[in-house]
Image 1: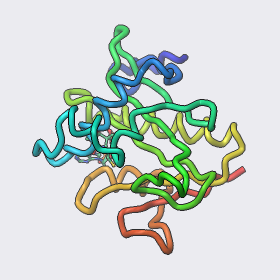
Image 2: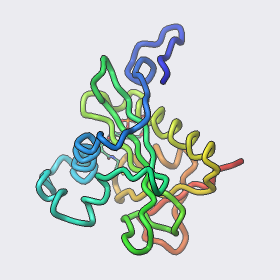
Image 3: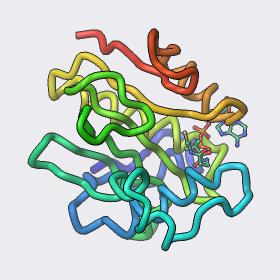
Length: 174
Ligand SMILES: CC(C)(COP(=O)(O)OP(=O)(O)OC[C@H]1O[C@@H](n2cnc3c(N)ncnc32)[C@H](O)[C@@H]1OP(=O)(O)O)[C@@H](O)C(=O)NCCC(=O)NCCS
Protein backbone atom coordinates (compact mmCIF):
# COMPACT_ATOMS: atom_id res chain seq x y z
CA UNK A 1 0.00 0.00 0.00
CA UNK A 2 2.68 2.50 0.99
CA UNK A 3 6.41 2.88 0.83
CA UNK A 4 8.06 5.45 3.06
CA UNK A 5 10.10 8.12 1.31
CA UNK A 6 10.99 10.44 4.16
CA UNK A 7 14.46 11.96 3.88
CA UNK A 8 16.92 10.04 5.97
CA UNK A 9 14.55 7.10 6.30
CA UNK A 10 15.78 3.58 5.86
CA UNK A 11 14.70 1.35 8.73
CA UNK A 12 11.96 -1.27 8.40
CA UNK A 13 9.44 1.12 9.92
CA UNK A 14 9.70 3.41 6.93
CA UNK A 15 10.50 1.18 3.95
CA UNK A 16 8.26 -1.79 4.68
CA UNK A 17 5.32 -2.15 2.33
CA UNK A 18 1.93 -2.43 4.02
CA UNK A 19 -0.83 -4.53 2.48
CA UNK A 20 -4.18 -5.84 3.72
CA UNK A 21 -4.17 -9.18 5.53
CA UNK A 22 -5.81 -11.92 3.47
CA UNK A 23 -7.73 -15.07 4.39
CA UNK A 24 -4.88 -17.14 2.89
CA UNK A 25 -2.41 -15.60 5.38
CA UNK A 26 -3.45 -18.16 8.01
CA UNK A 27 0.06 -19.60 8.39
CA UNK A 28 1.47 -16.11 8.92
CA UNK A 29 -1.08 -15.31 11.61
CA UNK A 30 -0.51 -18.69 13.27
CA UNK A 31 3.23 -17.97 13.46
CA UNK A 32 2.53 -14.50 14.84
CA UNK A 33 0.24 -15.99 17.47
CA UNK A 34 3.05 -18.33 18.51
CA UNK A 35 5.48 -15.40 18.82
CA UNK A 36 2.92 -13.49 20.88
CA UNK A 37 2.21 -16.29 23.36
CA UNK A 38 5.96 -16.97 23.58
CA UNK A 39 6.84 -13.27 24.03
CA UNK A 40 8.96 -14.03 27.13
CA UNK A 41 11.34 -16.07 24.98
CA UNK A 42 10.28 -19.28 26.67
CA UNK A 43 8.60 -21.86 24.38
CA UNK A 44 5.23 -21.93 26.08
CA UNK A 45 3.43 -23.22 22.99
CA UNK A 46 4.33 -25.01 19.78
CA UNK A 47 2.50 -24.68 16.45
CA UNK A 48 0.68 -27.92 17.29
CA UNK A 49 -0.50 -26.46 20.61
CA UNK A 50 -1.91 -23.42 18.83
CA UNK A 51 -3.77 -25.57 16.31
CA UNK A 52 -5.25 -27.82 19.00
CA UNK A 53 -6.19 -25.25 21.66
CA UNK A 54 -9.46 -23.52 20.70
CA UNK A 55 -8.55 -20.50 22.90
CA UNK A 56 -5.53 -19.94 20.65
CA UNK A 57 -6.66 -21.43 17.33
CA UNK A 58 -9.39 -18.83 16.93
CA UNK A 59 -6.68 -16.15 16.68
CA UNK A 60 -5.36 -17.79 13.51
CA UNK A 61 -8.50 -17.52 11.36
CA UNK A 62 -9.37 -14.26 9.60
CA UNK A 63 -13.11 -13.99 8.96
CA UNK A 64 -13.86 -10.95 6.81
CA UNK A 65 -17.54 -12.01 6.81
CA UNK A 66 -17.82 -10.83 10.44
CA UNK A 67 -15.62 -7.76 9.88
CA UNK A 68 -12.15 -9.08 10.69
CA UNK A 69 -9.28 -7.22 9.05
CA UNK A 70 -5.55 -6.66 9.34
CA UNK A 71 -2.38 -5.29 7.81
CA UNK A 72 0.83 -7.09 6.84
CA UNK A 73 4.24 -5.37 6.68
CA UNK A 74 6.57 -6.80 4.04
CA UNK A 75 10.19 -6.19 3.14
CA UNK A 76 11.17 -7.43 -0.29
CA UNK A 77 7.95 -9.42 -0.43
CA UNK A 78 8.63 -11.21 2.88
CA UNK A 79 6.28 -10.63 5.81
CA UNK A 80 8.05 -9.05 8.80
CA UNK A 81 5.05 -7.95 10.83
CA UNK A 82 1.29 -8.22 11.09
CA UNK A 83 -1.56 -6.60 12.97
CA UNK A 84 -5.01 -8.12 12.92
CA UNK A 85 -8.39 -7.43 14.50
CA UNK A 86 -10.94 -10.14 15.17
CA UNK A 87 -14.58 -9.83 16.16
CA UNK A 88 -14.53 -12.73 18.61
CA UNK A 89 -17.84 -12.55 20.46
CA UNK A 90 -19.28 -13.61 23.81
CA UNK A 91 -19.88 -17.12 22.49
CA UNK A 92 -16.17 -17.54 21.72
CA UNK A 93 -14.35 -14.68 23.47
CA UNK A 94 -10.67 -13.88 23.12
CA UNK A 95 -8.46 -13.00 26.07
CA UNK A 96 -9.06 -9.29 25.39
CA UNK A 97 -12.83 -9.51 24.96
CA UNK A 98 -14.78 -6.49 26.23
CA UNK A 99 -18.04 -6.56 24.24
CA UNK A 100 -19.54 -7.92 21.07
CA UNK A 101 -18.74 -5.58 18.19
CA UNK A 102 -15.43 -4.45 19.70
CA UNK A 103 -12.60 -6.14 17.79
CA UNK A 104 -9.54 -7.45 19.60
CA UNK A 105 -6.20 -6.33 18.16
CA UNK A 106 -3.11 -8.52 17.99
CA UNK A 107 0.25 -7.37 16.65
CA UNK A 108 3.58 -9.07 16.04
CA UNK A 109 6.85 -7.98 14.49
CA UNK A 110 9.28 -10.71 13.56
CA UNK A 111 12.49 -11.00 15.58
CA UNK A 112 15.24 -8.97 13.97
CA UNK A 113 12.84 -6.22 12.92
CA UNK A 114 11.65 -5.13 16.38
CA UNK A 115 12.35 -1.94 18.25
CA UNK A 116 12.59 0.22 15.12
CA UNK A 117 9.08 1.59 14.90
CA UNK A 118 7.40 -1.05 12.76
CA UNK A 119 4.99 -2.17 15.49
CA UNK A 120 3.94 1.43 16.03
CA UNK A 121 3.37 1.90 12.31
CA UNK A 122 1.28 -1.27 12.09
CA UNK A 123 -0.92 -0.36 15.08
CA UNK A 124 -1.38 3.16 13.68
CA UNK A 125 -2.44 1.70 10.33
CA UNK A 126 -4.88 -0.68 12.03
CA UNK A 127 -6.44 2.08 14.13
CA UNK A 128 -6.80 4.30 11.06
CA UNK A 129 -8.56 1.44 9.27
CA UNK A 130 -10.78 0.89 12.32
CA UNK A 131 -11.78 4.56 12.28
CA UNK A 132 -12.51 4.36 8.55
CA UNK A 133 -14.85 1.47 9.33
CA UNK A 134 -16.69 3.56 11.91
CA UNK A 135 -15.57 1.47 14.86
CA UNK A 136 -15.78 3.17 18.24
CA UNK A 137 -13.50 0.94 20.32
CA UNK A 138 -10.71 -1.61 19.90
CA UNK A 139 -9.45 -3.88 22.67
CA UNK A 140 -6.40 -6.07 23.25
CA UNK A 141 -4.85 -8.38 25.80
CA UNK A 142 -1.30 -7.91 27.05
CA UNK A 143 0.36 -9.70 29.93
CA UNK A 144 1.84 -7.77 32.83
CA UNK A 145 5.52 -7.20 32.20
CA UNK A 146 5.31 -7.26 28.41
CA UNK A 147 7.05 -4.10 27.13
CA UNK A 148 4.40 -3.98 24.39
CA UNK A 149 2.13 -2.47 27.07
CA UNK A 150 4.08 0.77 26.73
CA UNK A 151 3.52 0.85 22.97
CA UNK A 152 -0.22 0.43 23.54
CA UNK A 153 -0.35 3.10 26.25
CA UNK A 154 1.56 5.51 23.99
CA UNK A 155 -1.06 4.90 21.29
CA UNK A 156 -3.90 5.74 23.68
CA UNK A 157 -4.98 2.35 25.01
CA UNK A 158 -6.01 2.34 28.68
CA UNK A 159 -6.85 -0.45 31.10
CA UNK A 160 -10.40 -1.66 30.43
CA UNK A 161 -12.83 -1.18 33.29
CA UNK A 162 -14.49 -4.32 34.52
CA UNK A 163 -12.20 -6.60 32.54
CA UNK A 164 -9.05 -8.45 33.56
CA UNK A 165 -5.97 -6.35 34.35
CA UNK A 166 -4.48 -7.61 31.10
CA UNK A 167 -7.17 -6.07 28.92
CA UNK A 168 -6.74 -2.62 27.37
CA UNK A 169 -9.11 -0.61 25.22
CA UNK A 170 -8.94 2.49 23.06
CA UNK A 171 -11.87 4.75 22.24
CA UNK A 172 -11.47 6.01 18.70
CA UNK A 173 -12.12 9.65 18.06
CA UNK A 174 -14.31 10.38 15.10
C1 LIG B 1 5.31 -5.77 20.60
C2 LIG B 1 5.84 -5.61 19.19
C3 LIG B 1 4.75 -5.93 18.20
C4 LIG B 1 6.23 -4.13 19.01
O1 LIG B 1 6.76 -3.97 17.71
P1 LIG B 1 8.13 -3.14 17.53
O2 LIG B 1 8.34 -2.95 16.07
O3 LIG B 1 9.17 -3.82 18.30
O4 LIG B 1 7.65 -1.77 18.22
P2 LIG B 1 8.25 -0.33 18.05
O5 LIG B 1 9.65 -0.38 17.55
O6 LIG B 1 7.27 0.48 17.28
O7 LIG B 1 8.30 0.15 19.56
C5 LIG B 1 7.27 0.89 20.14
C6 LIG B 1 7.36 0.89 21.65
O8 LIG B 1 7.05 -0.39 22.14
C7 LIG B 1 7.72 -0.61 23.37
N1 LIG B 1 8.32 -1.94 23.22
C8 LIG B 1 7.73 -2.93 22.55
N2 LIG B 1 8.47 -4.04 22.64
C9 LIG B 1 9.55 -3.75 23.36
C10 LIG B 1 10.68 -4.50 23.80
N3 LIG B 1 10.83 -5.79 23.50
N4 LIG B 1 11.59 -3.91 24.55
C11 LIG B 1 11.44 -2.62 24.87
N5 LIG B 1 10.40 -1.85 24.47
C12 LIG B 1 9.46 -2.41 23.73
C13 LIG B 1 8.64 0.56 23.56
O9 LIG B 1 8.01 1.45 24.45
C14 LIG B 1 8.73 1.18 22.20
O10 LIG B 1 8.87 2.55 22.22
P3 LIG B 1 10.33 3.24 22.31
O11 LIG B 1 11.15 2.64 21.20
O12 LIG B 1 10.04 4.67 22.12
O13 LIG B 1 10.86 2.88 23.65
C15 LIG B 1 7.08 -6.50 18.93
O14 LIG B 1 8.12 -6.08 19.77
C16 LIG B 1 6.82 -7.96 19.12
O15 LIG B 1 6.33 -8.62 18.22
N6 LIG B 1 7.14 -8.50 20.31
C17 LIG B 1 7.01 -9.91 20.62
C18 LIG B 1 5.58 -10.39 20.63
C19 LIG B 1 4.69 -9.54 21.52
O16 LIG B 1 4.99 -9.24 22.65
N7 LIG B 1 3.53 -9.19 20.95
C20 LIG B 1 2.52 -8.43 21.65
C21 LIG B 1 1.65 -9.34 22.45
S1 LIG B 1 0.44 -8.42 23.40
